[in-house]
Image (cartoon, rainbow, N blue to C red; front, top):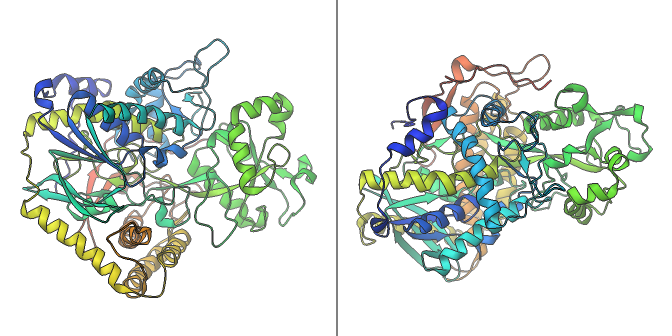
Length: 637
């Protein structure tokens, strides 16, 4: 497997402009001759499908939900970054680029990150034109707030519903194209395999989740925009349906999987309250703008928070990171919260929680101002916990949230399979070892609105791929394998539900490959995962048939993929014998407990090649070159 990032030559600031000036074009009359499949309809998928259809390409879009509006992008709360510098506080494209590179602990590709910062400003213009109701200042200009890992205010927001409002904008653009007949929208369809013929992606196999029909769909190019895989941990902030299936099936067909061990643990989530709960709920990082995070100074202090005097509170983030305080990046804030809880100073029944306290902000600004900024988040918290956060500090704790790893892509966002493009959280490209807040929405929309419409045109004009007939032997082969897998799941007829296996896997991953990892724990995972997988194929029960709506069957297929993918994640975490960003190996930390990188040996992208079920994948390395920034120890103090 050859990894060629295809980064354009020239100064960093000019690479994207040079690319667009020199790329090949498809004329408007010829675009309708090319068919493109988009799998996923969140911010990246919906924006890509709408943009490509607007350009004139024949576009099909697939999602397993009943509507694109159900994509998990809708759950994003706090905001979207852009280097507009409306605050005149010193922001710039370069500063956004540098903050993102540094936030990712110098484990991302310079060229892609700079391009992301460049197009961030276009995104805001696009979304405003679509009617996204960003918050505004008194004079009518768009408002900004700050987020973790930045000392400027560059985050555009719509109260605590930014993802929802942005998705409505992208969905409106997509709906317009659906209405015009330019996008063939297939809801309740799940991609179950990628078809590769003559060395390039030429279509997908889907299952109609309503009637169980297995369908073949061909195209000149395929885009996967199916989000991340945090649900490998069972409990995460992701929607219950989020999964790794589409990306993992593409990996099995030859697409390299990059940096799977980079999984972000978000510091501000509602703590686990029950062994039997199905998911966790995120509380936006934006709350840290006005909320102060603290725990009691004394171990085991169980007094109600409002009874603990000021001099007996430890505002540990403000104490440890005076420059950034409560806005320290997510990986650092998460580990700090775990540290104080491990010391026995955590709050709540489990002891795994810290306070997020708005008392000072309410006294300073008034409850109305706080309500205006975060009202829906406060309401959501109260509904879940039955505690009024205006009166009692919120209790929060870190939880799996976002995955920086994904299918490997080059500068064009094309995977190692020609014709297979990957967008948004499903690829690995922009966030390195840690994602700064408000960057996920930025990447999803950048990929969909501004990058793919250019790079796919360049691919189609350069390669002129033929449309492979759905009767091709590769389509038949893939469909047969999909049917056999479904038949195998249904034939087990064991006694344990899919949820039992998912919970078992998730607990193992959280305990040994979660917020921190070590060699012994990762080796234990690699021993245990095959056993869980074997048990799954002997004892799982899936009732009903494959010929109708069957959610148990859907889940079983996704969990079967998680049971294979988890092994890949652990291989990657074991290979990376350093700490960087969200990947914290306990063997490698500074005297102060911070992540300790090993740039000499691990400054590369890990790209794994599938070698068969149960076989160890092969590691390929893309060296990371930093020509424009100086690699330095990441400090926020």
